[in-house]
Image (tube, rainbow, N blue to C red; front, side, top):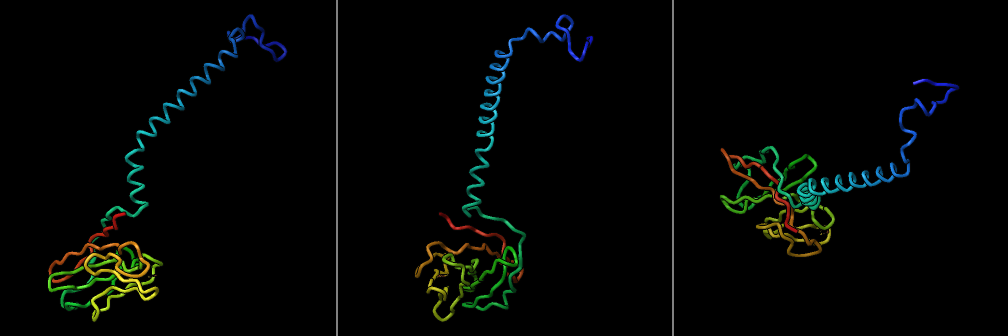
Length: 174
Ligand code: FES
């Protein structure tokens, strides 16, 4: 290709001078729209299962597995008593209650109303929130009085070798 005065002469140019530019632009737009529509479709299909999982996570409905954590030795919690612990992080306060010789229940103890700590009152066999007189069923974690509407998240525990361990957080069902 030769260049004279900074311009490319038509007779030996790169064969693009006779292309209908309007038509070229139309084809480009159409092609682009097809690519966009195709990509959107692929994205929508590919993200369907993940969207469901993400929604479940955000709504707190998913069970969560964490490394097993020792709460207490059996000898250190009498029937009818409770101990406090943290699970799964040190900021998640929780309550373990020994309801019977072989029956343990545990819950994250931030009240589901406005997150005041919930206590086990042994004499009354109730979990209470002193802030607004909320009460929760010790067997299920369900609210039974006061403003709370959602159960306390349950911590699944297991007894092994003379100790009680926290193994999982079970979120409440919507
Ligand atoms: S914070 Fe527990 S009842 Fe209001």
